[in-house]
Length: 374
Length: 87
Image 1: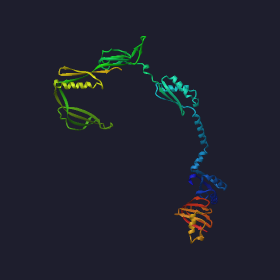
Image 2: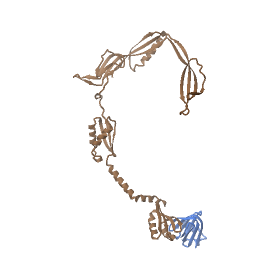
Image 3: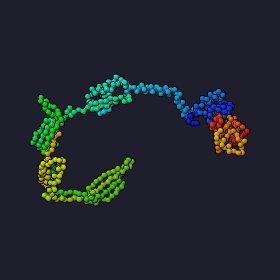
Image 4: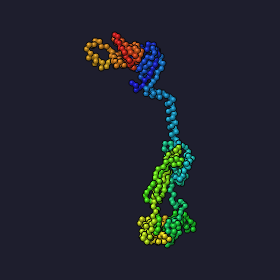
């Protein structure tokens, strides 16, 4: 019964029982209460409220108030809200009208041209914002003609947005200027040259150092004019890879023994208030000191100063060169061969030993053939 | 009339000649369901009276109200203290 909604009446009049009896023959009455001797309140079904109202008026009852409630009552209230219906109708019409026009232009794609430029161009080109008046194919052609940096473009109308997708034109390398010459990264002797593009600065058999120019980034045409090009060449050279190892016959080395002593001091405003740890008893030692903040705020500026003593010992090492010679040469060779690339053939290996006072310098040289061009 | 009441009346042996044309169902003194009434005569929070075919019925109590009233049935809620049948 409650699903349809109800109407509550408050009526005033005499002989209410007789009227209510007659009314109950036509409509169902609910929650009938009498608040005063001539005022009573009751509810009827929403769809019978008109019948009840008419009956009460015909029978001389004064209707003090009547109030609809329930789902159907709300629906009816909405349906008879003419203002609301007009507003809905107007807004629908307005929405339908404005939907026929484009509101904004969006540009997607990475190009050198600024998005703003394309938008400004389209805004100036478009005669009308009405969707039916826009020819997307024509617009695409116009944009492509106007912007040489764009290789392809597509324009589509999506909703109320003009969506523009652009792709950048890729310029070949030959058309881009500012070339740099090929420079040697190694010392060596040029063994073979195969020039592809550019002007050679060296010949076969020349000795080059690191930093020397090998190929210039230009060519001379038949009229004697200079044209900039990207230099390319295959240049093979015997390069020298060298590494040095120095050996001292007499050395004094300080080593850590592994014994450690730690001392902590708590500081408040750089004044020591507490300390912990034994006193340093090492004869020879190294010190590491560090300071940490114990508190995160400055209300109590507590800091911890940690001092670590590493015991050390000094050793004298006497190593005659002749006893260690093979070892040192092998080490120098190992260091040199690190720089040899995979599948590279070592043409020659040799070493030199130089004596300077109490030390010996072993210089190991490996000669490999490598392409040093670009 | 509902079959439920007919069935009960059919089983009655002592009161067959005294079966009235109305039915009263009192549930725990809080709800009184009436079938077969012939109209309200008194309506107040303490007294509700209505006519039946063979007389009148007076219901006395406190805070009483008519939850439902149709042409034939009635539902009274409240603190029902006394129900009298006058024939």
